[in-house]
Amino acid sequence: PLSPHLQIYRPQITSVLSIMHRITGFSLSFVIILLVLGLFTLAAGKGYYDFYIKHITSYPLKLIIFPAILGITYHMLNGIRHMFWDLGFLISNKQASISGFIIIALSFFLSFLMLHIFGLI
Image 1 (tube, rainbow, N blue to C red):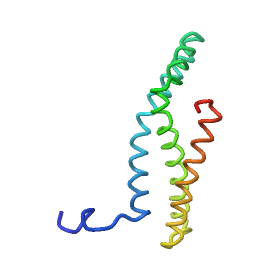
Image 2: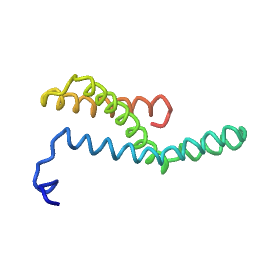
Image 3: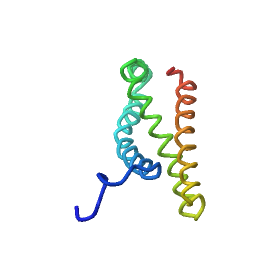
Protein backbone atom coordinates (compact mmCIF):
# COMPACT_ATOMS: atom_id res chain seq x y z
CA PRO A 1 0.00 0.00 0.00
CA LEU A 2 1.09 3.55 -0.66
CA SER A 3 -0.05 4.98 2.67
CA PRO A 4 0.37 3.66 6.23
CA HIS A 5 -2.22 1.07 7.04
CA LEU A 6 -2.99 -1.38 9.85
CA GLN A 7 0.68 -2.00 10.63
CA ILE A 8 1.25 1.63 11.70
CA TYR A 9 -1.89 2.73 13.52
CA ARG A 10 -2.89 1.58 17.00
CA PRO A 11 -6.35 -0.07 16.98
CA GLN A 12 -9.12 2.14 18.31
CA ILE A 13 -12.50 1.01 19.62
CA THR A 14 -14.29 2.51 16.61
CA SER A 15 -12.03 0.83 14.06
CA VAL A 16 -12.16 -2.55 15.82
CA LEU A 17 -15.96 -2.41 16.09
CA SER A 18 -16.25 -1.38 12.44
CA ILE A 19 -14.18 -4.39 11.37
CA MET A 20 -16.20 -6.66 13.67
CA HIS A 21 -19.43 -5.30 12.17
CA ARG A 22 -18.27 -6.34 8.72
CA ILE A 23 -17.10 -9.75 9.94
CA THR A 24 -20.37 -10.48 11.76
CA GLY A 25 -22.39 -9.36 8.75
CA PHE A 26 -20.50 -11.78 6.51
CA SER A 27 -20.57 -14.62 9.06
CA LEU A 28 -24.29 -14.31 9.67
CA SER A 29 -24.94 -15.22 6.06
CA PHE A 30 -23.80 -18.74 7.00
CA VAL A 31 -26.14 -18.83 10.00
CA ILE A 32 -29.02 -18.51 7.56
CA ILE A 33 -28.31 -22.13 6.58
CA LEU A 34 -29.27 -23.30 10.09
CA LEU A 35 -32.40 -21.17 9.99
CA VAL A 36 -33.45 -22.51 6.59
CA LEU A 37 -32.83 -26.10 7.73
CA GLY A 38 -35.02 -25.45 10.76
CA LEU A 39 -37.80 -24.07 8.57
CA PHE A 40 -37.56 -27.06 6.21
CA THR A 41 -37.78 -29.52 9.10
CA LEU A 42 -40.70 -27.58 10.55
CA ALA A 43 -42.51 -27.87 7.23
CA ALA A 44 -41.57 -31.57 6.87
CA GLY A 45 -43.28 -32.63 10.08
CA LYS A 46 -42.90 -33.15 13.80
CA GLY A 47 -40.48 -36.07 13.55
CA TYR A 48 -38.02 -34.15 11.39
CA TYR A 49 -38.33 -31.05 13.56
CA ASP A 50 -37.72 -33.05 16.74
CA PHE A 51 -34.62 -34.58 15.10
CA TYR A 52 -33.41 -31.08 14.17
CA ILE A 53 -33.99 -29.69 17.68
CA LYS A 54 -32.24 -32.70 19.23
CA HIS A 55 -29.13 -32.04 17.16
CA ILE A 56 -29.19 -28.24 17.23
CA THR A 57 -29.23 -28.33 21.05
CA SER A 58 -26.36 -30.83 21.28
CA TYR A 59 -23.19 -29.62 22.93
CA PRO A 60 -21.03 -29.29 19.77
CA LEU A 61 -23.67 -27.17 18.05
CA LYS A 62 -24.14 -25.06 21.18
CA LEU A 63 -20.57 -23.94 20.54
CA ILE A 64 -21.79 -22.59 17.20
CA ILE A 65 -25.10 -21.20 18.49
CA PHE A 66 -23.56 -18.86 21.09
CA PRO A 67 -21.25 -17.02 18.64
CA ALA A 68 -24.12 -16.88 16.15
CA ILE A 69 -26.49 -15.27 18.66
CA LEU A 70 -23.70 -12.98 19.85
CA GLY A 71 -23.06 -12.00 16.23
CA ILE A 72 -26.74 -11.30 15.63
CA THR A 73 -27.11 -9.12 18.72
CA TYR A 74 -23.83 -7.27 18.10
CA HIS A 75 -24.58 -6.66 14.43
CA MET A 76 -28.10 -5.43 15.22
CA LEU A 77 -27.03 -3.09 18.04
CA ASN A 78 -24.05 -1.74 16.12
CA GLY A 79 -26.29 -1.19 13.10
CA ILE A 80 -28.59 0.91 15.28
CA ARG A 81 -25.54 2.86 16.45
CA HIS A 82 -24.59 3.46 12.80
CA MET A 83 -28.09 4.81 12.16
CA PHE A 84 -27.61 7.26 15.03
CA TRP A 85 -24.32 8.32 13.44
CA ASP A 86 -26.10 8.85 10.11
CA LEU A 87 -28.49 11.20 11.90
CA GLY A 88 -25.57 13.11 13.41
CA PHE A 89 -25.82 11.77 16.98
CA LEU A 90 -23.03 10.21 19.09
CA ILE A 91 -20.29 11.13 16.63
CA SER A 92 -17.75 12.79 18.90
CA ASN A 93 -14.76 10.64 19.83
CA LYS A 94 -15.84 10.30 23.45
CA GLN A 95 -19.46 9.46 22.59
CA ALA A 96 -18.38 6.95 19.94
CA SER A 97 -16.07 5.20 22.42
CA ILE A 98 -18.67 5.09 25.19
CA SER A 99 -21.38 3.84 22.84
CA GLY A 100 -18.96 1.19 21.55
CA PHE A 101 -18.38 -0.22 25.03
CA ILE A 102 -22.13 -0.09 25.70
CA ILE A 103 -22.76 -2.04 22.47
CA ILE A 104 -20.27 -4.73 23.52
CA ALA A 105 -21.78 -5.08 27.01
CA LEU A 106 -25.37 -5.12 25.71
CA SER A 107 -24.45 -7.69 23.07
CA PHE A 108 -23.15 -10.14 25.66
CA PHE A 109 -26.06 -9.45 28.02
CA LEU A 110 -28.71 -9.96 25.34
CA SER A 111 -26.94 -13.07 24.01
CA PHE A 112 -26.91 -14.74 27.42
CA LEU A 113 -30.51 -13.67 27.98
CA MET A 114 -31.59 -15.17 24.66
CA LEU A 115 -29.69 -18.40 25.34
CA HIS A 116 -31.37 -18.64 28.72
CA ILE A 117 -34.82 -17.98 27.25
CA PHE A 118 -34.24 -20.59 24.52
CA GLY A 119 -33.05 -23.07 27.16
CA LEU A 120 -29.60 -23.52 25.67
CA ILE A 121 -27.73 -22.69 28.90
